[in-house]
Image 1 (cartoon, rainbow, N blue to C red):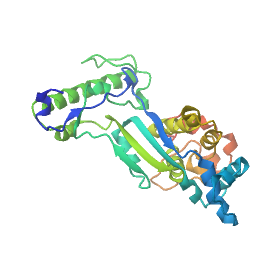
Image 2: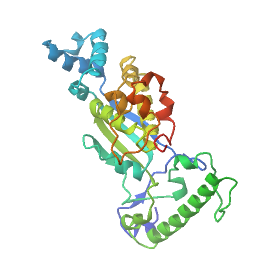
Image 3: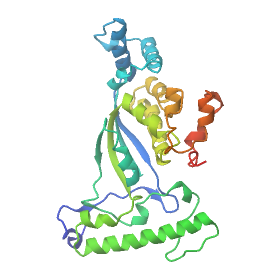
Image 4: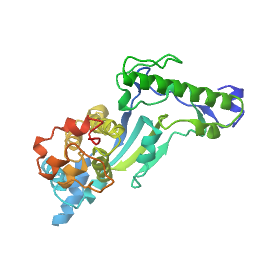
Length: 300
């Protein structure tokens, strides 16, 4: 960073670039940095006390105990054993609208990249795109025409981002501190954050945010979370079935699957393409793709 750029605030630094594609924008990515190494052993140990069995060493816990604990904890309201499993994620490529929602989960710990001191590079390379712009391509400056309506939206979107980018960098270069110039930056500005939680609260979070009511970005992030847990053992050299068993369990489904009914029926709640079948307990007839892959599932 040049002295000219620093002059607004000596603590400023160049933000680490986001990884993205010119046409597709910045996409979410998830990295599981650390997880309890014997997660179901810990769950089984806590569960055992409910039936009077005292576990003083996880070597006393068999794989059958571990699997039974995973089954049992999904059948009871007593979810405390899941809190024994800790997880530390790094989530990147998500926008500020997403993180404003994320930090409302007060049962987790967060450390987010600062826009007060991190000066962004080209804003077009540091922003996410909504599902409405999927399949479009980056436009040239001033080109507001397009063969389809989504491409016309994209052209207007790109042109607006360029205008904001120019104003932001002119202000920072002329001496305005980045923490003040950031007021111009849009919600779609990409960011990254550390997310430290436990399995109980991660499952609760998944239930709420995998619901069709939630912003589509969440389904992409939780897809990454499940994939990271699935592959954590192999990546860390821990040849253990537990991680895949947790990831593929019922802990990562919409809240209606967890409760057996839809809890979003207020007058201000949105529609849902699967609610009627949920209320009839026809979960077997619902394809996961309906709530996982359709950005418009709550817009019917």
